[in-house]
Length: 430
Image 1 (cartoon, rainbow, N blue to C red):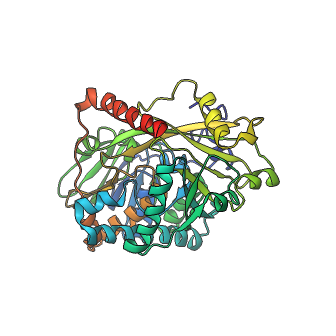
Image 2 (cartoon, helix red, strand yellow):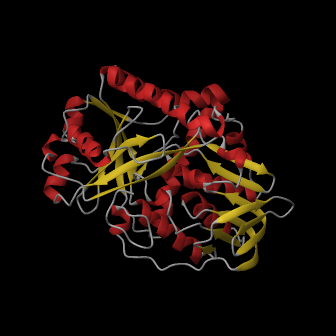
């Protein structure tokens, strides 16, 4: 990663640098048994583990590195209803009634996220408010129409802000209007992941770090194997997302890891920071290769974007990120980046969530497509309910259906890069 603020317990980022080092958890040694074995100590795995433990199940979580090591500890921190795909994708796949049902589930996921933070007293600096912003007239028209559609068809009360109203909250000339969601918001991702782990452990969950799963043994009682031990259980949950490698090939062919990058400025001071975003909301534009940004609790601007579809850092990353940031906020021409980091998100071909079962006793969730802060917790809750015998919600997600990425192992990434280049060109031309 291109951030010089390295520390031994987590990949370098402003998130990691802003928290005290966390005590390591013991690696798995030897054979053990549980009711449920979970691969991955990110939001999905930890929420499922917490929900199952609260229902009385014995749960063991195996994490390859440290809690929140992957996207759960490095993401943009923006939490919102919905999924990575347009709702029209779900309507085409499932029909209007089930698409509405899935959207209502996502609203539940956002509500449960806030309740989880409050109930377990997780200090992750939650702030209310999220805005999608339009750069071009066609985007402005589409975003305003979507605001009306969400009210009419999904009973979801978004606010439409014209340019003048937006500029009263956001000090940028770049945008023509905004779709504002007061129910959305943002948080400190790593602080939330660590707080979620503490809540799960308080409920009785056992979390082993530095315990990468090397093999899933399927059968009447699935087994997660590591180099130094194994967990046999009645049920297994695969929550590795973009970092799930070699464990379940049928999942990996339907998911593509995509790199995304975030920079943090030095502290700007309260006055200068809040002159940029006066109501402290999170913001994202609606380009295919989007910019997203917000303020931190210590008055930095956190600015993300510059996706890498080869999962490698783009050349000249720091220069490119500064150029993008200053295009939004020219008044930051004298400001650099103290931190710059990245990681991989998991996308599906249609950007819809891919949750379900590999077998009656092996569950999985992937395909959060950059919308995972709220929906990962929803996935964890839905999988926990299915294991406990209430599978109706998971059944709806399984009906979405997902195709493999074309090209096989050798060509699927080049084909995706070519496709994304077209979408980036479209963003620039009209």
